[in-house]
Length: 224
Image 1 (tube, helix red, strand yellow):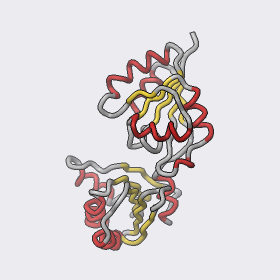
Image 2 (cartoon, helix red, strand yellow):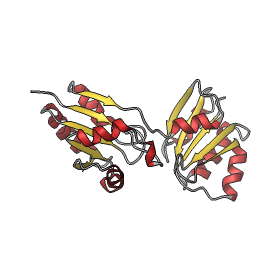
Image 3 (tube, helix red, strand yellow):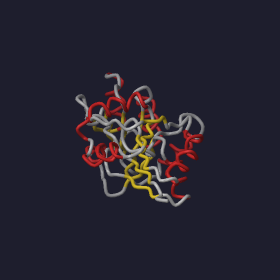
Image 4 (tube, helix red, strand yellow):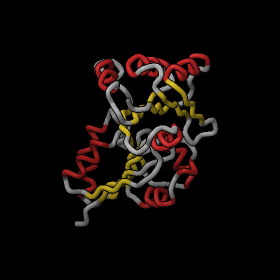
């Protein structure tokens, strides 16, 4: 029996025109699409005329659905995995399914495509040759410890943050890494109101104290 395959497919983080031709073709051709939120992905599907059946696969049910999907792929199904925006498994569900598929010797292919931190890193003007991706900082337990550890990091650091916690995170980064550390904050990447603000951490704190943060953020901070 022919073994199936798992395709990990990035989707646009803002502008729908960032979708690749190959991603559209595979989403149309595969047997099933696992989506983080089928309501969100339905807009994408409608825009590109994709009619493949979708099923929910998110952080609250991925432990349950992973085993079932692995069995389907072992039976020959070609399954695509998408998240609401960007590349699955990067601060989004996906790692568990990828790992389970690999353990069962099912082919896994991740397409290149949209990931928020790459344009934010390049637009920051900070060194891109060596960097570490931190994603979301721990919200409570372990947060202070992680910030203390990052004070010694020599590489450029990248963080994801929601608009509701941007000011808190920038303030804490300034406290632990130094208020004069160079940084940038990019929001609404590839959307109409995309913006990157650059300066010291203290300057960014001042900026977003005066202008309420809106949209999803990528914070880039210079290494020590």
